[in-house]
Length: 416
Image (cartoon, rainbow, N blue to C red; front, side, top):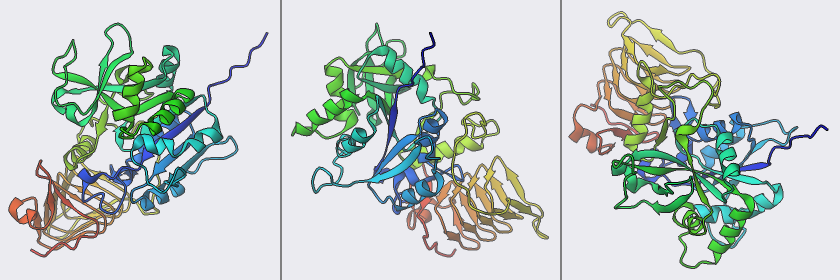
């Protein structure tokens, strides 16, 4: 007798309300998930692409902080056919539980329990919106179902020195269950087989719906709770024996290579964001944007192809180990180890090295821009030097601990 297979129903909830204060000035005018990356993408495109590629196309994006550009990106880019019930929709803080904004990631879920009631899913993905990675969520869901746990946390190994920036998982030595979950610990224990590493949460979770609803309601009644998924919900489910870990290194994505397999970057700071972009421009990139079997989806401006122009005095210039987006024009200039977003202009004699230029940036003739992130619509005046004199740069720009100059959107850069 033929038995029809029915796939479990899944709702995906993407958390995109973070302020991203450590990414200032890039988050001065936009939510962190809307920060551009790799020339033409936004950070949120990676979480959404992973879900869409795996076939999970009922997605709500919970927003709060300076969400306008993010909302515009979602509405113009992430439009799916409704014939099969697919959607990506932005859900702002609606104050359904009273006159207050989201008090934390758990509270964001609690205030949107109506979305779960409407969809009635069997399982719920709760993913962060601001990490760079490829992952097949279907494999994580199957691991969760097989485990019988109430929640599964995706985990990745990171150096123990970085543990203070993550939720750290202590795994049961005999199973995939979690014995302890420590949010940003100051004295973590290393792994038994690698004392210099810990297992960190990637900020991606799968919940069995009934378990999530129950723990959210219990958390809402706890006056001592910080209303945080990693700080409160996961430890509560660990204590009740319902928390499981999924090892990201077991995930297999079509089209990936050994070079970029299991790549994951938390881009929470200017330096980590800069390094993640530099990962793209190496001759053999650490993260490969050219995987046609698991594409990263985004929107494109209507612009002509990039163009490289020879100049009478400077010749054709030099372009090496760089990404040039559509609409860029580089005229008799040097561009090395850099990412140029759409519609940038680099004038004759200019030098751009180790830098990230956002949309519509104009680099004036004979100027120098090194080790910098330049936000949209900034004009670097003719002959100005950035990344040459750090003390001079610090008078006008944000300088990261790693020495990267970050120039905010529309900043009026002083002349040389």
